[in-house]
Length: 189
Ligand code: IMP
Ligand code: MG
Image (cartoon, rainbow, N blue to C red; front, side, top):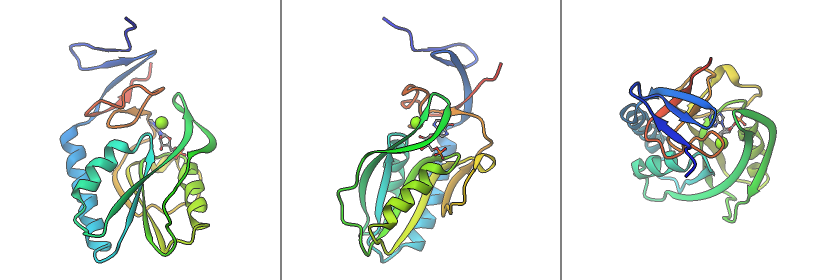
């Protein structure tokens, strides 16, 4: 059996060649998600917003966020983008699977796991703009302000973090670690 993940007494985990240490607990994440949901519930009350979960990374955040949304007209859909290879943003963003819903005239809320360089978000926004939505809002679980390399507006940020590479709560290192309940940051050697 290949050994992908191991725990030691210090709660450090190993994913392939990298070690990660506990960084943001599931309790802290839950509080941040509730706070963002409360702001969205207030701002978008009375609308028929379509939450657009950016797969793969945002699936856990989207599931938790959407269950905190109390707007009766809220709907959810999924889109798939890919820009990361290992721990580096490739700079080239691919739309792996597209949108089937009609978003013209609607309020769209992009749900992202993390905004790093911002290229994925910028590209997705321009793709969606072509479909004539009424407005596009962005909700992200995590934002690395120091890594931002383009001009893009983010409406709702649950947690700001420094540029370190992280995994857990849907975020991966080469597809591993998405199942972790807490968020872990890479240990630099
Ligand atoms: P950006 O295009 O550079 O903003 O990157 C956005 C995407 O890269 C996110 O949706 C994530 O899937 C991935 N990503 C960025 N930073 C991290 C990280 O620290 N850990 C895991 N994935 C990340
Ligand atoms: Mg990823």
